[in-house]
Image: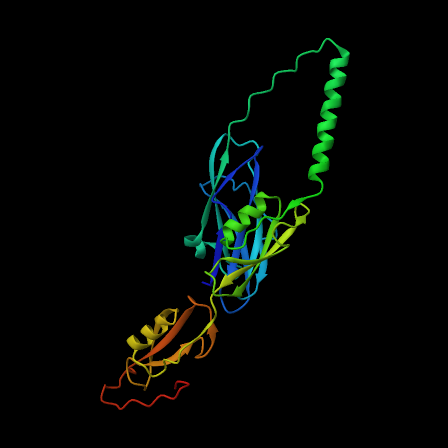
Length: 295
């Protein structure tokens, strides 16, 4: 399993004429680049997924976030709610390995409107001509107002998912990068184009998202297991323990992975190997001393 996380701009999509979309943000929190797939799967056995993901396979750098456009088309489906599972997973693994990280999106298909009644027949030719001229004038005004774009919303201080929803609702798309900041993690700290500036519809607004600074892996080699786990946990890491037969004192740490001093993002996984007795040797054998680099 890798440090791949998925955030959606909305858990529910209201479809218009059977179609809709949302933005999915996929973050690689591991220390190495990952080939990541954003897959869509039916939420009910035997049902279609109704989903298309643009460019689903991408290589995401360490600590980077990619925006995926997820489109839905339920044309012909009966009114109701249709669940779809979105899973971000490593291309080197099976999507089933990430099933517990699936995000369920509910597609809401509304009742089709009743057929419009045929327009009343106008008895006077000039009334028809006047109505056509009025419609053309309104259409021309709307075209003039909409063709130039709009003002970019201010999303600074918003959480990443809320900022994406605001920008998409205003007709823009969002691209993001993470930077170390003292602001709460996930907060938008800057944007380009600037808030209030004019931009064409569909323009990508680049935002910077706050994250915590990397923390070097503490040196716990030679420490008792309990002390090492406490030290690593207090540093903000998740710890897994592996026991290895060794000449070192039983219960002491002999190696750390990633190596001591490696800068990692808070919440990253660190594995320690703890010495156990070699098979066939009694506890009276004196333990070998440990160097800072292990055995």
